[in-house]
Each structure stands twice: as C-alpha cells, then as structure tokens.
Length: 334
Image (cartoon, rainbow, N blue to C red; front, side, top):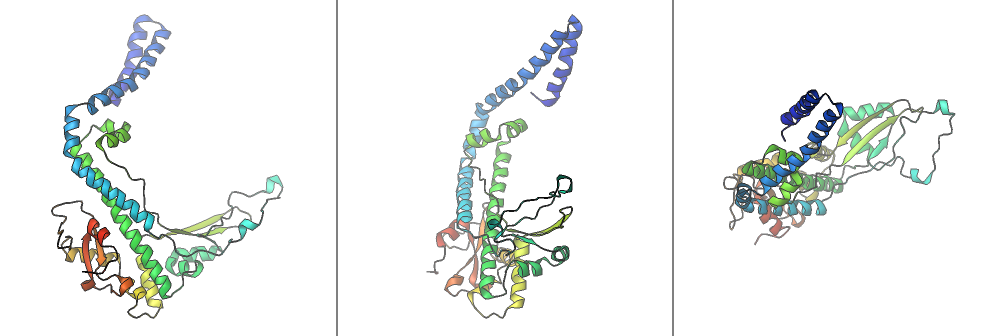
C-alpha cells in the first residue's frame, strides 16, 4: 500500500480500536494486523500489475528494443573479457608476503589504527611524496609505478585507454537503453522500488553486472606510530589516461610507429571523428545513424589497423556502429 496510507493506518487503527474497547491488547493486535497486511497488499498489487493486459501489451511493444539491449550487454561482456586494464606496479612491499609481521608493543602503547598496505597498486612513501603526488599526479605515477617513457609503455597506455573508452561508452549505452525501456513501459514507482528484478526478468532484459574497472593507484603515508596517515588516489579514467599519453609523447622521441600513432587517439579526437561522420556508421552496407536509433552505440575504427601500419590520422579513422566494428575487427579494408 502507499506509504502515506500505511502510516495513516498504523496510527489510526490502534487509536480507533484501542480507544473504543479500552483494551491495550486490541491496540497491539491492530498494529500487528497492519504490519502483516502491508507486504500482502504490495504483493497483490504487484501480481495485478504484471498480469494486466496493459503490461503484457507494453512488454510486446518493447520486445525489439529489449533484444537490441541484450545484444549490447553481450558486447559489453566481450569488451570486458578481451580488454586490458593494467599498467605499472610499485615495488614497495613486493616481498612483504615472505615476512610475518607482529606488533609486540604493550597493549596501551599499540597504534594499529593506520597500518601500511602492501599491494602492486599501492606505494608507501614519505608524507612529502604523498603531498607532491597530489600536486603532480602524472609525474609521480610514472616515477613510482615503473611507467617508463618509451614507445612500448606508450602503446600499453593507449591500449588501456582505448579499452576503457570503449567500455565506458558501452556501459553508458546499456544504461540509457534501460532508461528508455522504463520510459516506454512506465511501471508504477513501487514496482521498480520493490520488484525491480522481477520486472526486468518479465520484460526479458538481461541486466549487466559489469562496471568499468578503472585501474586505481595509491600513494600512502603511514606514520611510524600508526597515529596518522594520508593517501592520494589516482584513477586511470579517460581524462587521466589522455594526460598520461600526452606526457609520454612529450618525453619520448617517436616517429610514425604503431606506438607513436596510438598517442593521437584521445577522447577529443574520437568525439571529433563521430561529429565529422554525422554520428553515422560508415559501412556502406549499414549506414545506420543516431537519427534513426537515438541510443546507437558508435565506435571509432582504424580503417587500416595500427598493427598493420595504419595511422591515427583523420583520413584513416571512421565511425562504425558496434555491430560493424565487431565484425570488422582487425581486418584490412576490402
């Protein structure tokens, strides 16, 4: 039942019944009846809605939208499984697992509130290094996590950036499609609040548990006594990876190599290519656009793959829908 009605009954029923009988037991019984009836009423309303002809009709109307959504969800899983989301690692504590640490301080003198963390993506450092990392994250990320300024590293950074960018767009596309399905069916608010899983299941939507696994790097300072600590977290999202790529390009001398050309692929360039191509798939046998399908997932493709000598220049870049890009892969143009 609606929240306002539930609260009204919860207050009014005991007062009316208890007041008329003067019996405290009756008052408690009235409260119990309201509490027991509430979930039963929700279930009755839910079953009535899901069995209604209106819901069945709307479910049939969105069937094609749901099918496309589920295809994109499968594509998201492919990107996640095939992608690379790792870069450098810190060497501090790399052999910590070989030692057995134990705090032997007297009980009153123990300071275990801040204990150093040892992991590949965590660098334990002085307080000054941690503060410097907050001011110059790219510089200190490269210095302390073994991210060398060479073409091999540049290729790795661009590979991670491209995988993350594709996954970001695909996950966002799935979320927009789900919002569209909800807008088309317009279920009562209580359905999405209390029975969301059942709603999506009956509609036929395959929900994706996948999120973007941004690599996260941490600079950590822990005082000797464990009383204080400070950390700086650097998340390798698209803006950070673009900044890292630009920094690497400035630090290394590069020619028209695969690694160097990858440095040109940034979020800004991808957006420009899509705008140039009018957000339309450039495959002649397809040609679908966001004008025809507002939630179309578009990707930027190298016509001649970088691995086969293609450059990241506008004339070698094209917009493809996700289906055409998946079908093309790293193939050479016909």
